Length: 355
Image 1 (cartoon, helix red, strand yellow):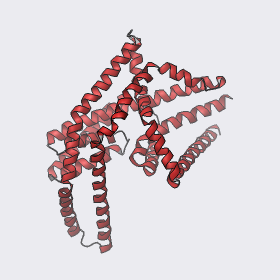
Image 2 (spheres, helix red, strand yellow):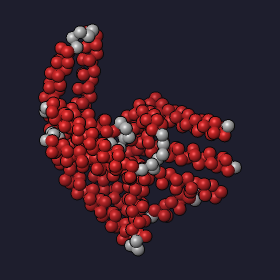
Image 3 (cartoon, rainbow, N blue to C red):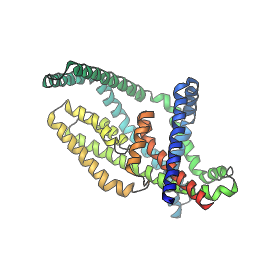
Image 4 (cartoon, rainbow, N blue to C red):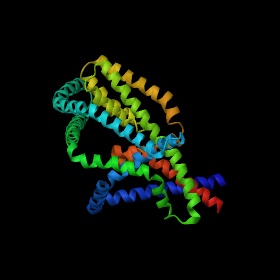
């Protein structure tokens, strides 16, 4: 009976969270005013949110260095210089090549489309026995895909080449991260003042639980994505695949999405390999499969581990929900949001039992 009541309570909170999420989404979609306010708030708060995330991910490293008798200020400066220096060097080396490959891909897109159309015509010949309506649907789908790819590449090229518009954004973040790391304890103490005294132990315990599961998951996923990106770049270079760097970046970024990410990232690589040779498609698929086997069986269990401890069915559900509502961004934030919600619900339930 107890387990049944607990399951009903979890289901109640899950349904409530979904309804609140859908209500906010409908407000954003139906009222342009809310959309404009939301967009303004995101643009204003984006540097602070990103800086908070970076400081949150780097702070445990600072703490570990401090435990090794390194002064806190020196530890912050060391991590600060290594992280932002390494990031700046990586951007300096990768950014021009990625932009060049992206521009070249955008210019070669009509050639690729012609090649794919030849393949489609061959497919028509093999499927000539099918009704004409099915071929019409295929034509409509191909036209939508071509239009979508052209728009996507135009946006990506425009976004990559507008780097000077982001100078303020990029220069503010290192400053904010430094002060967030330096005054981490002061900031957390400031926010604790707004929590009533009788709830502080429970809130502190819940915050530590969220930090333990969410922090380990995000840090582990970023390390795994870095491995996938580097391994994909090496494999694509050895195979002689065009746009190897750009495709490796896509593989690394999409790998942050559980289950669906590797499939999404593999599609562009296979599509480019298909324009070169049939044998290259097979080798590219084998390379991607080998990388995913290493990532899924060796790296993720040890680096990410069971930090979120959520059933795969629940993860797939929130991934599909996030994808339907907010696209790729929704799929990226779905699992962290589910992790936070799980911890909050479990602690609210424990607090209710305690009372």
